[in-house]
Amino acid sequence: MGMESIPRWLLSGCLIAAMTCGVVFGKELMLKATSAMVYPLVFILLALSVYLIPDWNTSMMSVSPDWGSMPSVIWLAIPIIVFSFNHSPIISQFSKEQRRVYGDDAVKKTDMITGGAAMMLMGFVMFFVFSVVLSLSPEQLSIAQEQNISVLSYLANVHESPLISILGPVVAFAAITSSYFGHFLGAHEGLVGLGKSRSKAPIGKIEKASLVFIVVTTWIVAIINPSILGMIETMGAPMIAAILFLMPVYAMKKVPAMAKYKTSAPVQIFTAICGVAAITSVIYGAF
Picture (cartoon, rainbow, N blue to C red):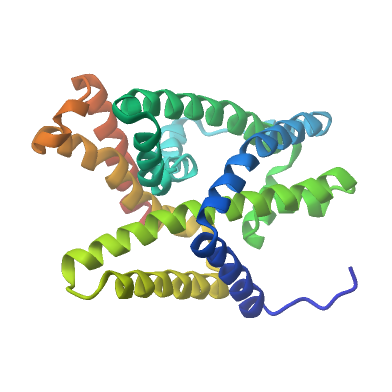
């Protein structure tokens, strides 16, 4: 656009401050806005997936797979998969809202909503992933990873189509913004709870300190700009796997209040195996 690029520290600081203000000063509006974005985002994602079909090529097929190493490749990819479909930070706020609206029927309604959402995520996201992978070459995917940008941003850079040039950044920005909202709410609630259990300070001070801590640490990470996939593999995924897979299985057995949510033995075993696989793959990858 002929404009000089804004320094990363300034741009990231302004964006983080703006998104944080949206959560702090307009929580109800933020929730309504993110809810309203769901269906347009899904439609745009589907439209982009279909739009890329004419660009599908066989370049990925030219790379001969090593079937012997396939189990280890899948094993090492588990942390990325766990993180990609994770929405645990917003679950607490979601559960509170369902309890307020549906009362005693909240558990049944929550299971129905999360189950439908999971199936929808799986279908639309996997179709988009396959469409993107088939439309790009292995070299292009490597370049996108080296540039540390989302695949939507890369598609906008390499395609001359005005549609992708406009929709790509829009979808990426909307997805990042809504993701920040969800993770901010979950992280802030967790930090406040931890502070209340460890400190006798007034709740107001704990909330403000937690808010400042989240904003500052997020800003520092944005300035440093580390590898996204590297952070997911080494830091995010192991903690998420422990929280999502191992802790629930343990809690259903040891915590009386959680006993009513106990699932069948095969489901618990499968859940525990997934958690252990995600954590051990990170340990193996580190060496």
